[in-house]
Image (cartoon, rainbow, N blue to C red):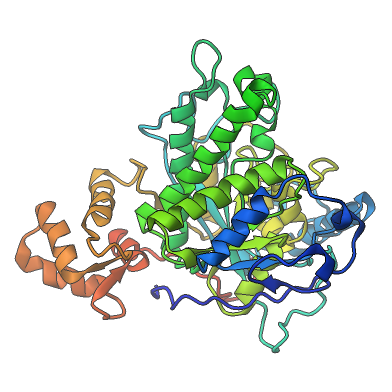
Length: 501
């Protein structure tokens, strides 16, 4: 395992007309005339926050508004991806059980499951996998991906980048946000409500924080330098919360409670990023404010306001988060990977199936389904992990066993008890004794950790030398995880060897 390379912050190459604009937001009249941008704005708040962030030297890039694909285009690409998946796996046709696959492409081995059994969580109910769920509530699943379609859903015909090098693969981190308001049957609301049917605000926010921290921890363990993110946990999963808890209706106190909930979520993410130090790269936040005072504006405003507050208080560095306005997250991840960065794209996953029912007619706008429709590489791996194209009753270990069958890796997260108390204690000590607050451990800091856990001082030098794989005198979080799990191989995105049959 190699430690993370120096952070790379390449210029994004937009394939959309007009390209990206760096810095403060440009007036509408200086851009190409579009019917949807000529109408007067009803809400300036997210745009004012972006301008203020830029004054603090926080990077901001703006792209032309995305044009959503027609149903005919999206359905055609979906059907093409289904055929490609069947071809790559050697299936007679899409829909057969995964056990019928006669070919295992090498990229399907590049999978890592970060496990967390949900011990000591704030919510009630079933946190682990099993029953209806393939993925545990707090688990993070990392799959390899390459974008086959651009932001306009056009096929990327060349396998090479503009400079002639091979297109870069990147990780997609599948994590399931808590669903407390998608509809009247939201799967997680009961576990985060009290006996009066009201949302348990603190329990919900803290467990979402646990998911945020697990995502950052997984990115750090994989050596990721650039993390593409979006207002994770908002959108559809809060949209109909008012039907379950009337306090969150827009008509109640002019939507104050829902606004507070959004800001609390964003603040919890900023806190996770600023305090854990398990991920020390750059976050690229994709937002698409409309200026119409709608859900898109509300989500963007919450994150931008809390990022700005974090910058002002010194919790996060101004350059820790780059805001990408109207960027396509999949294309942003691909461009960063093509530029040589170690990239991960966060996906709002479904716990029942990896990629959910991306191959069906529903979920026209969902990020999970549309990422799989536009990356057959990831869709192949998802098919094998799901066991096919059907959601079936699961055993708790089904996903872990599927990962191992493909040659992937299992890593317990710090919050999990699966790795044993000693490992959990060491990771907590890592956070506590990183006194320089820079996300790495010096020899002196490491010695304090080991001595506190009962290891003799004379053994600390030998242990540190074995863990410091690049001999720079410090342990990065990636080196730390590699040492902690006894030299277990953490997967990389390089392809080695032919497909397995």
